[in-house]
Amino acid sequence: AQKITQTQPGMFVQEKEAVTLDCTYDTSDPSYGLFWYKQPSSGEMIFLIYQGSYDQQNATEGRYSLNFQKARKSANLVISASQLGDSAMYFCAMREGDKKTSYDKVIFGPGTSLSVIP
Amino acid sequence: GAVVSQHPSWVICKSGTSVKIECRSLDFQATTMFWYRQFPKQSLMLMATSNEGSKATYEQGVEKDKFLINHASLTLSTLTVTSAHPEDSSFYICSARDRKIFGQMNTEAFFGQGTRLTVV
Image 1 (tube, chains in turn green, purple):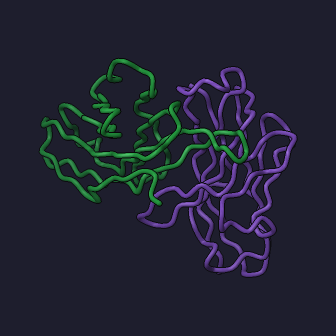
Image 2 (tube, rainbow over the protein chains, first blue to last red; image 1 turned 180 degrees about the vertical axis):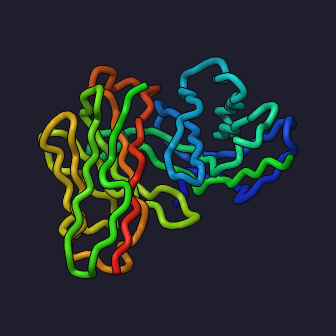
């Protein structure tokens, strides 16, 4: 079963506008972490923002903020004042413990391709 | 920030040969390293979790005899694609977590630059 869902395969946003990228997740573990990564065409993975399952406040990092709704199991990424350099793939990821091995692991959603239009 | 170096960046090999990909944490010690495979326009699929000094844990459907993982030290993990076939052509990327802050949920995994493997 899909653990992380990103329902928007592709998104367009006008430069300087804000955009929200959706992410929903599924876990029965009370302790988990949620990440957003950006992957430009070069392939590198760039860490953007983190939200812990016990965090009371929504995470913010510069132009990035995370709209965390725990009961709905959603962790949407909001990018404010979009720039042309924001055009990339965006992946939502979750870190949770693996009960079989006792080690934790990070799994990724299918990604959203964001295009910023001048 | 922490640096993870992956080598080579790209490699072309003949069908039937083996290819080794290295993942090094340059300025920290990594208890755990993760290996992912990414096909074009798809997400990162976790292949295995590599723990220093112990056997790697492979995800379901990943052949451990084909994708050999060695994590001999706290700064180096290697992935060897044995008897490579054209269908193994993909982007392979590793990530590592800093041993000093291991266990904290907010510890991001630092990624290597990735290796683009083409098997001809």
